[in-house]
Amino acid sequence: MIPITVVDVRAAEDLVVEVLRSGAIAQGPMVKRFEDAFAHVSGTKHAIAVNNGTTALVASLQALDLQPGDEVVTSPFTFVATLNAILEAGATVRFADIRRDDFAIDPDAVAAAVGPRTKVLMPVHLYGQTADMGKLAPLAAEHGLHVVEDSAQAVGASFEGRKAGSYGIGCFSLYATKNVTTAEGGVITTDDDALADKLRVMRNQGMKARYQYEMAGHNYRMTDLHAAVGIPQLEKLDQLTAARQANAKRLSEGLAGTPGLEVPQVLPGREHVWHQYTVLVGPHAMLSREEFASALTERGIGNGIYYPKIVFDYECYRGHPLIPDARVEDFPVAGAVAAQALSLPVHPHLTESEVDQIIETVREVLGA
Image (cartoon, rainbow, N blue to C red):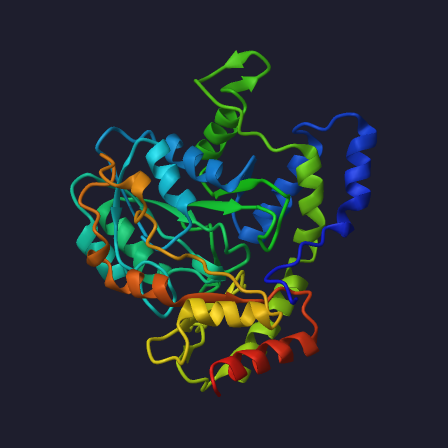
């Protein structure tokens, strides 16, 4: 089986042993070292490490002191953490449909969704390519909105040379399958000194210094052990990303023209870091998306469906008071993409023969 992803963190062994031998394994100097490296990668003044990507989203919204009734506009096609974080922060969710070409929130739909209670725009940079920040950032500025980027899948991605996570508050996940992983972990990026200070106090039970409490806080800390796992990946992120980009290029060239299959695009001005290589299995394909996925699995090609439904289209969210008037039929592009999207292996550990095998198998299964 060619897996959909491979986790290889062996390069961190020496740093992990260093932390273990130090006897100090909670948040400490290794976290600071990781934060400095991440700030460099994201092109921001500050990177605040936390214990997971959902925490990064929650803490960022909490730091903005949203009030009951304040709204966050975001994508309906995303991982559930995006929605859960907004609900945990007590904000009301407004959705705007996506574009098919980048799987991200449509600036025109955002403009229509913004209302008098809107306080935050939360674009989701899905699969490794940013949303259209050239339109979204000015739109947010026009309406006086905070920008909180769900950059969980987009470490190192950029829009016209500006990195994901640098448009306001960036929120990254370091989960096991991400392009940079610490097993569990997250990072918040910002250029705002006051906000960064507030987030650092918040993540440490509200302490500015030991037993000097500044606010009601939380335990959102990352450990030095987790940071040690991530540092070597940041140091070779360019190399790992280049391998993903090379694999994606070969996949797109090899799969072009496959009947019923739409390959992903790299839009002008954007650097795609290929967290996932996501194709669309259209209505004219000889197999349904589910049949296609099963056929690939039977032939040893790992694959994944990210995500099978619009994010709020589950029983646990029906009638939720903070998700008013959300109907699947109001988001036709997101609905169509959720029914057609399927991801193929693109990770940096693929061999050339494995990429060839993926291409040949996909074309064979779809009758090319």
